[in-house]
Amino acid sequence: MNASPLQPAQPQDAPAQALYGGVTNRRVTVRDLAKAKRQGERWAMLTAYDALTAGVFDEAGIPVLLVGDSAGNCHLGYETTVPVTMDQMVMLSAAVVRGTRRALVVADLPFGSYQESPAQAMHNAARLMKEAGVQAVKLEGGERSARTIELLVEAGIPVMAHIGLTPQSVHAFGGYPVQGRGDEAAHQLLRDAKAVQQAGAFAVVLEAVPAELAAQVTEHSAIPTVGIGGGNGTDAQVLVWTDFAGMTAGRVPKFVKQYANLRATLAQAATAFAADVRDGSFPGPEHSFE
Ligand code: KIV
Image (tube, helix red, strand yellow):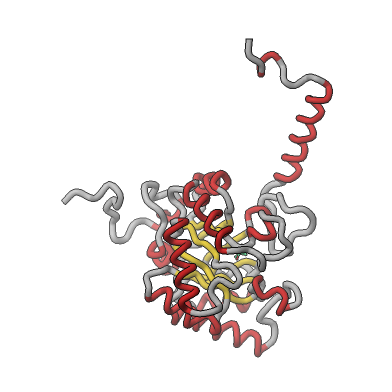
């Protein structure tokens, strides 16, 4: 039987590099990530909020892109993620899906879009899948969100959980403190990780927790753990793209490694353009029509 052009036949146990460019004619799936966990393969996730940037990361081979509600403070000019709306998430997520071919695209359910009732969570997760075309959603909370995760998963929606420092609770935390310090908090994190796994989450983000605790969670977890400020012992790592590329103004968190300095590069380009316009050297004859 011929393989469908949309669903090319895949060997049951494709080689481990499948996440990073081994398979170019289909999107990475949650099954690929489960296999990566079994094989001990580490993977990278970046946030993306628009088609152009998402396309660059997709071509670079980043297997999972997160349309994070960090769009609030990294893209839309808010101070926190709290004001981000469903309509904004749908618009940004649709752009990221349009800009990509390989990456698994995960979209955040923003604050207030899933806590009210299971019906509300289902309605909004379905919007992200139907209107934006994402392949999975992410929501914050461990034990407190387990029932919601279970319902979404039962409905066929892949869910990435997010525990530890959950930025939508910034006002309850009084900032962005490291989580899981001390015996009681560490035990709560372990319970949260267990609860989301039992509820059916396909992966769990661990944000701002001590490295040793994140490694312990990872060791006991059957699903991939995705660290951000969780040290080197998690299965995957995620960074906010504006942080990792040096676009963010001012201080970035301790856990960020800056791989480029795009802010300075863009500022230099803008300054040079303005100077060329002022002194009349742009446009030159090579940029003009006869
Ligand atoms: O919104 C976001 O970008 C996130 C990451 C920090 C994991 O949730």
